[in-house]
Length: 601
Image (cartoon, rainbow, N blue to C red; front, side, top):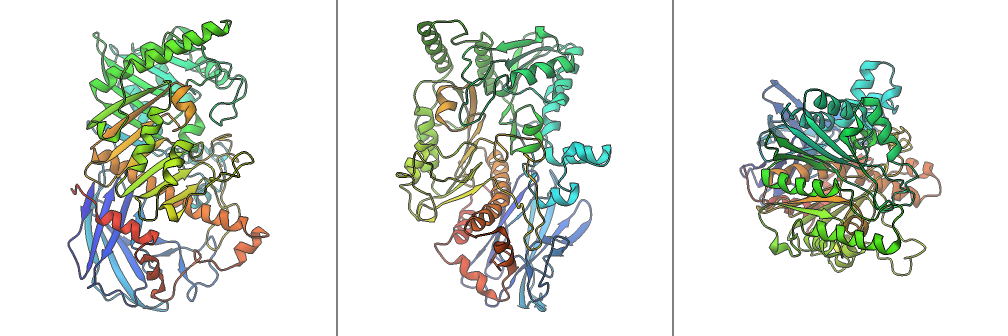
């Protein structure tokens, strides 16, 4: 939901809320008295719990705490937020809050909080609804201060007792695992549940499927059972993955082979889907869809960033059913086919996929509501359409990229200027030249109004930040350790936002080769708000770590950066931090995006 406060002494607060995430911006006019401003002490009032307290802070005044360490805990009461953009990632679903931003002046050791607070009342989105969309993000932040402090950087199954193990898994999954199971539990005895999964390795989900079968639900699962012997889309697969794990999980859960459809054709391509379709009653009427980026695995649910998207729409479910029925025939070239037959079968398969619907190829042709896009298909017109979405944003755009910036996107972004729409890229790895593209590589940056964050973590203590761990070290993920979600947001804070979400990696392979599904959602501000605030959470989390990693790369030793005072370690003792909000700078641009927001609650 979207909120704005009244204008208060030259200030105005803008807020966007998701389910657990809330993003704020404070716009100022010429009448705002910012001279000597040291920041804002942020107070949150939880009206339901009847609690009122100042929010925790990370940066500290050096004059007050000259040597902060990982055990240092402060609140914004004494160490204010020196920013006009701030986020709270600890909200509860469907809850109302009052936030008070107290302008703080004075000196670090003699703070003046006498100015009346700036006040805004907001409400978060409900977690589970009966609306057309519910959206669920996992934590996607094993590499975090919270996990280091709560669970000592140890894997969930290495915790000291069963209760802490359960708490670690729950913290990492947030509500994603519960939502997957709840979708399965919606299937009653007379219903049909059709699944289509690349990885089906999570025992808890498999057990939920088995319970559905036992209560009389008709269940059929298309699983990737190929001998994937060659890498695809940058993922170094090995022979037997995920086939062997999928088969083992099916057997362990007691799911009969009669419930399984083996996807074995086109062995060099991935059956990359992660969706379910719920058909209701004896008439088998398609009603609901579960989709998103989440593989049914520990790494998918607890490790890398992922999203699950629950859609309650008969038309969309009907389209997914048609796609499922096509995949259930195991289409495409099969083992033993001669080359000519393989080519003919693969072409016929792509033609059949394309016959399921014509996706829009221009932004103006995207209808309000939902549009499905299935793969594989011939050519890159759909991928080019996604690039046009990013390119045509009026104020802001966001995208997550697990396998780098596709050239179709970069070709457009390199033409952007500092006056173009603000564009955020959340990457698995830093965009950097390789031995192959070094002569032609172009780094995107502020001159293009493009800002990047990538998967990284603090492997050494830094000021009050403790050493962190990674999903690789915890054994949750091996290949994609950080950013696995696949979504794109065009002008998310407008009255006509566009969200693209699903299983495809915005790559050539995900368009031409893999079995994939995507949904384009236009004009739904609730969906856009949830995705936008979660993107903020993840981007901000990894942006700081990306800066630290990039800084370390410029130092001779990791110790050098730890012992050098950097702007990220301490609060400024004067109002010099306001210089970061002069026109043309990133922080000011972010405020301006919020200030132009439409569609308020």
